Length: 459
Image (tube, rainbow, N blue to C red):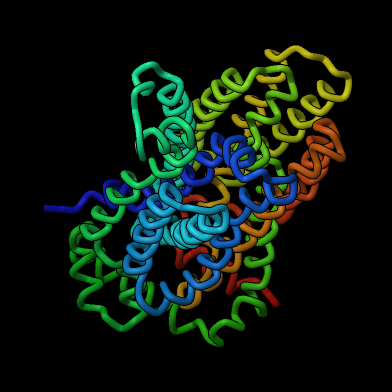
């Protein structure tokens, strides 16, 4: 019986679900944590971005560890960190303890953010690789959406008559300090992810790289015929024989442009302002005239649009290609950011108009930057140092995210919402140039063919 690669991709993509959930669940807790621990603007930013520091730590070691010990084993480690972080945040006794557990969760996010798409790209056939890796981004958007629903639901529980008679720890977690229930709710999906990871095989490409051809072939035979398995192993061995130089391959020769493209797209994806909306959406929507409950409801709508438009990428990325999706998405992002800035600048207090263009922004990001980034990062690097190279590029995502998470409160306070959105719009100009002029099209090519493309280019 053949193993369904889509099922394996969906299990690996659960790392994206936890990434999205962990990223978004914090949005409903910021006000409560800020009040309880009497946080200023800088410490509020630290609460949000502390997990991102952990993410940078996680992604910085994930590549090396996965190249040495395998993609599957380090994914399992990330699942353990997710579960421990969720439980720890729920019971932490101090702000420093809370931050420490957020850091631990961040390490899990960092590992999963790199390894989930990498694992999927290494088991997927060329003709459906874009779609299968895009499942990871879809899982991120679903994680964000479920987190928004969880926040709205738990806020309702805390204010319900049914909890009026609760006492002790239950009252503390679900009523007086409901942020604990919000952060702790991640435990369930983390445990499910962890258990399912034990059912997936190692990456056949990684096993071949380690000289374990027989085991690699046995795994490949679960997906393809004997002839196709032999052919794939032969291609991987051929490309490995042409690779040399270890880590210096990342920074010199034909692969230098690949790493520059990866890092640039990674940072610019975050400078679009996507996480300013994810993290500080309620605060921004309140600035636009919504009450907190309405603002959290607005976040749920944002989450729904994010999921729906990711399906466009899932549907079209292997048909239209990576470049067109990214180009049209970036243009839409720029236009919507400029208009949202104008609405705030001229104090046009039409919340429906504000929500409309924020949703246009989310829609454009969801079918372009969101999925295309992870597809590109998982496919443009050489096998021998794929884990390490992807670590470097993925770290750039999180450096950008940490910058946005830390600086958005300052931007909103000093540049005002209008200046904040215009800053993000200006950052899209280099993204547009790279998308149109620099980025190669990789649709329909095997990972080995993409590698041949870089090797064929002159230094």
